[in-house]
Length: 271
Image (tube, rainbow, N blue to C red; front, side, top):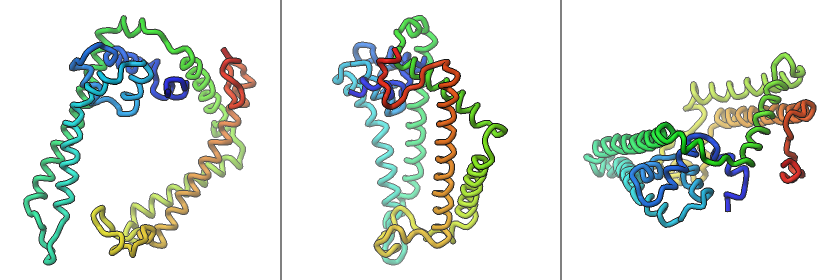
């Protein structure tokens, strides 16, 4: 079960006010409007992982999730209409001339439905966090997650200290500047010279006809150059980040304010 892993519970921020308010509403017995609204409009992964972490009954959650079909249907319909709008006859005329207008209207309705579901979910979450504040505050804190959050916060502050511009060596500064230069060059190539970087290809175009059965043919020489700069930038920023984390961990151990977990060190030794 994912609920056994501290990292998973920390990722969904089980100790945050919003997640505790969500736990309070979703944990309500029966099918209520606020519960269904959150299941429909809440962030997908945290919303549906949280009931498992809370050990809630699966069946009511599944029943409460059925109305999500009202979100899925207009999205699928929009995709189907957009595809139909791209179909052309041998003479270049649209197969379904009316579909373009309907697709635009459907796309607008889909956007409103998606946005509206998020707004309604946010309303009920805020309402629970405000109107039922005492109940939210009285909920038990996950101590393992709190300790992990404290360690991460301490390490984050050490990382900020260790990576201050005036404190880092010249060679590390060079890595950071080179990473910035590479990503800037990559972005400029793609933004200002797109036709020189990529072959024109739309979602409904045929790979076999337009790209000779090779998706990599979409990249022109300048496009490969921009990809090379992008990869170089990622490598350099990863190297800088790794150096910063190493220095932050060393600083955290020196300050000894909070324990820092090692991969080989079991959590039981720190509690």
